[in-house]
Image (tube, rainbow, N blue to C red):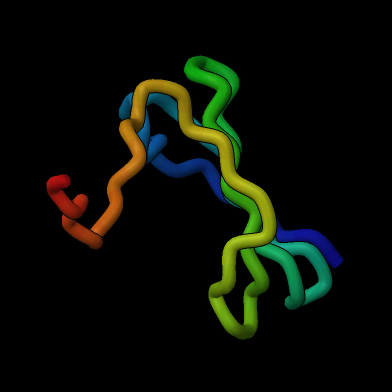
Length: 65
């Protein structure tokens, strides 16, 4: 069973859809900016993600040589 709701996109703020598929996968997608996030519903672990415009962040400080 799939449940779908409309939310604000976390990337651009436009309308996005969030779907929960069989209480195991959560998929958030925005057609405006091509944002995609697929997560395990139970653990919250990211299965696949694509967010144009969001810079990646590394919590580890680079070592200067």
